[in-house]
Structures are given as C-alpha cells and as structure tokens.
Amino acid sequence: MGIINTKKWLEEHFYEPTSICENMKASFDGDDSHNIYRYLNGFGMYKPSRRSKQTFEKMKELETWNKVERFYKKYKKKWDGPDVPIYLFPFQMTWRGDENKSGVSFPNQLFLFVGEVTDDKELEALFIHEYHHVCRMHCLKKPIEDYTLLDSIIMEGLAEFAVKENCGKAYNASWCHLYEEEEVKQFWEKELKEHLDVKKTETKHDQLLYGHGRYPRMIGYNTGFYLVNSYFQKKKQTAKMQFTIKSEAFL
Image (cartoon, rainbow, N blue to C red; front, side, top):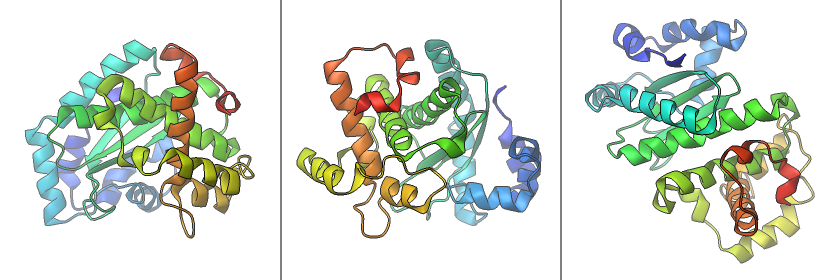
C-alpha cells in the first residue's frame, strides 16, 4: 500500500472533496462520503478555496508525495511497521491558529494534511508522529472505543518522543513545551489522575486531552510528553519496544 495517489484525485475533483471521499468509503465501513469528509475536515482536511488550491500546487512543486513515500519506507523498515494506505491532502490553513499541518491515524490507515511546509524535517516530524500512532495501535490490538485517557496521553507523548529522537527537539510540537514541570504536576494531582480511566467515547476524555473549557490548552498532550520523557530518562528501551509498553508502566 503506502502512498495513495491522492494527487490524481485532487487534480480531477479538487472542488468536490465529497467525491474524493467516495474513494475511501470501504475503509470507513461504507459510511456516506459527506460524513467522511466532515470527519476528516474536523482534523484539518482542506476546504476548497483559492488559498487551498495554492497549497495543493505548492505540495506538487515540493514533491510532497515522494518525500512522504521515502519517510514511510524508512520508518516501516526501522520500526517493522504495518503496511497501511497513506492519504495526503492540503491542510485547512484557517483551521487552527498558526499551524500548517495535521494528521489523523487509525490502526489500518493514515491521513496527513499538509500546508506550505518547506522544511523536510518538519514534514518528517509530522509523518513520524502519525505513523508512530499506527504502529502502537497495531501492536496493542485494542478496540479504539476501549482506549482510556491514560492510553491517549501516553500515545501522544510517545509519538513526540519519537520525533525528538529522530528529528531533534526543535521539531517537537509547540504543545510539548507549554507548561513548566510544576504546573504539570499540579494539574496531574488536581484534575488528571482521577480521570485516567475515562474512555475515548466520553466527553471528559477530549476535554482533558485537548484542554477544552476550563482546562489549560493541550494539557493532556503536554502531560503525556512529560511522563514519557521522565520514563525514558530512567529506563533505556529500543524504539520498537515503545510500541508494546503498557500505558500503566509510565505511571
């Protein structure tokens, strides 16, 4: 599998993203293409506009598909990772502040939404983060609906730890450095540790993971990165072992 030729789909149906999503119905259990598009758009997939068309042209100019193909081959071999389809689409530039890329991962497929990313290492960091999720989900063999808040924060922390190991600290996501250690510890004691068993399907899960409502922004992600870093300062593990360590070990 590997890189799917979404470039062809975009050239033929750029202004009809729901038509593009028809191609992916099988991997979403035959769901309606409008639902698939709405779901992917929520994670950063482009909306048709002059600006997003420019982004698409820039992706072609920068040979983004070829670059991601290289990253896929490299990390699939390095991590003995699963063979999954990888879909690339332009990023929704007005979607999230100053971000210029995002992604969403499943055990059986991977989506990358790319803005005007000219630094190849930045693109590699995005790929590492999302493909790391795929590898861990593949190894844990746990139904998505059974994932807890602890599973989620550890998964995010591990993915960014892999970015740090392979691309360097400069390429870590901005949320990795949002809070001081003392702030993380206080939040852990007051809010997080009582809710670690909250399931992915419950509202509280995303509130604490992303920092919605009264919670600090991206606090769950940041805490995951802190826990994983603390763990690996004490224990040396190979990259492949990161995919099978139980979430509870990081506590």
